[in-house]
Image (cartoon, rainbow, N blue to C red; front, side, top):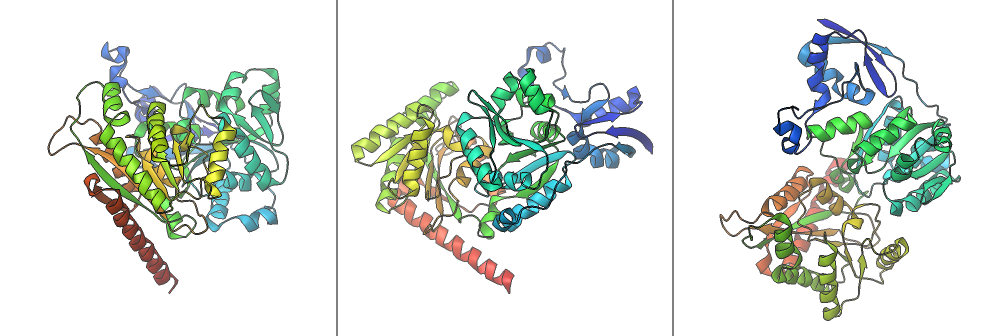
Length: 497
């Protein structure tokens, strides 16, 4: 059995005296092909094999080594002799006021993070289960400095306020033209990356031992890698509700940036344990044959400006309002949002629009109005994907035609937060299906991808034809939700017995 010596620090694993044969043996485990590599000019010319290699100068990210160590040892029959030089941040006992507020899974998550604090890792916690609170619970017994990194200005003050409330101490800010660091500081990755070589930032970063990367599924890029490298913390944790770890290019980059999966708390478990509201998907099949043009042309014609498709969306909103529901309609493009806005005006339905041109104050006002019961309908685009806390929402109409599995689960997760009097979530997924065996509808594959994500996450789904009409669709969806809630209650009772 081949023996390989590895010098392991918190951020880097270095292979000592590695000969070329061992290098070639290990290289495939620390490489990945990015999506669309076959379109690259260098690949077409034969000058590049499509692989991005993370094994350079006999070094790989420590998290990636820890992820791959067992697989390599088993498959290649090699033994790693590890000179483990990692150090852990120091902790004291968690304050009682924080521990009392921790749900059982949040306490378990903090314990798991502390056990992996010599490197870090990925935290796959469902939307609505309190990822920011959990980060604050980890920071509370930490005796050294830490940073919580977000990728949007709209999340900066929100995360700062929540962390300050958990910690009971001032939380600093770096971003939005402010540089006011504290022991724990919330930062935008854009500001850190832009100023990472300036003296003030270098001095601040020298004391940072723990970094949380919020929504790490959006952070797998060069900017975040360079930012973490400039800080060089002892520990990096990546927060996300969903991450497609079955895809090699995502898992490799994520574990290289943070480390292996440390804790996983899926939506299904959150609903089972009562920390999330129950929810079901009503997969509504809207059928038509595609135009067969380019993507932008088809999306504009089949999704944004389709009268029959928008009729369906409007009817679902109107029926939801009749049933005293709190409805959130999700679209991708601002043009689509404005079309639905005009339809709501003609229908006499009070509503708010949440999108990029609205200020953070205006967005928050719409959210607060819905949570207070003063607003029944919000039409939103992609800004709804992050940091939105609409607890009252009990109907989501996803009209985006998005292909992303992560985004589908994120959207569903926004609607299953607990709220007084809420019976559960009805998530209407508007599916764009072709007639019969027709193959020209390019958005059918997007629909199948989203629904596959729901199936893989064990989220109950009911399939129905759009031609049934909004009233029947709601009747069937509500009956399905009641059945689902009753089944969960039965399972919980049996588990207690």
